[in-house]
Length: 226
Length: 208
Image (cartoon, rainbow over all chains, first blue to last red):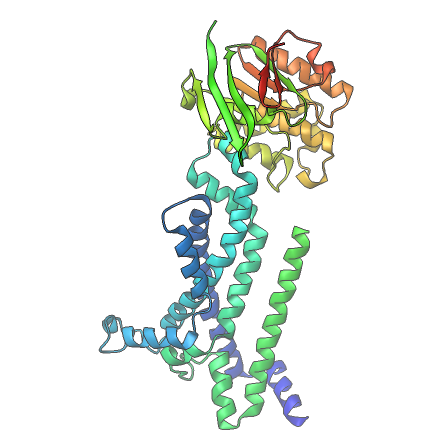
């Protein structure tokens, strides 16, 4: 009981190290998700309105990448960005930037795959109407993206949740360095192994609060749709 | 007489069932053409083939005009709207037609006022009645004066007064040079103007 009280006190007393970890987690995951959303929605939009050779295969590949193990992503990035790796000269290993790249790779297939369904449905609904307006491809893509805006927001929030809760990749490429690359999930792993359960629990509670806020946002958006 | 469309031996089938079979006819420029027939006779399919929304199984549709420089509007039987306000739905059409943004509001308000629908300007599309939606779809199809206008059941959900509006609108457009092709059974609409008639029966042209 004392442990739980202490954990809540950490949160409500705005424990400095806790705030720094939560802040870095949000920055890294938000940056990765925003970048992934921007790229994914444009790709999904193009895939929804165009028929091209290999489209079915591409969809299967993207769907398969949704379940890409984060540790594998972390390992590959480690090999590429380590000193002897192909992009080692960029000196990105153990920095927040490479954590953003890792989360971007994990979140992008999720957003593409989920957006594609929503955008394809919109395209099928509006196809005839847009054809009779002689809209350009760009205009058609932008129209279906705007028409799917509420669905896409929910999908982006889902992507953000995935990025925030991810641990395998960021611990490999970030190295869990205090005040530099330590985020909520990696910190929970470390503090638990060190027996500092109070801080680990505080971070866990913070993560749950963020998840609740996101679900609350999804509920508001859904209400707007319905 | 100039022909806008020439159809030669046009057939369209789905799963081995002919929706249209060996249809040949012409649509005359600056005319009003009414397409009649029982439910399932192939009227809407004919209209979609004429516009080019469907490809014929066999036969040809010759379009005797420059498709890029001809304004063609199409009113669907079940109108499709964007999930936005009335104003934004109409803005979207003008944006696609590359009309100067400064004129958008005036064009839309003029069109809405003509049909006594100015009060709908800021309304969301989801709160409109069936009749209001139908009128709005018609307004949208004539926002920019079309050279060719396709109307698929334009009197759906409309009362006598509004059918009168549509009738006057069709005549006005035709007098200005538009070719109008209408799928319709409503005598209230058809009584008011002279037209060419194409009647379908089970996918075949009925010349009787």
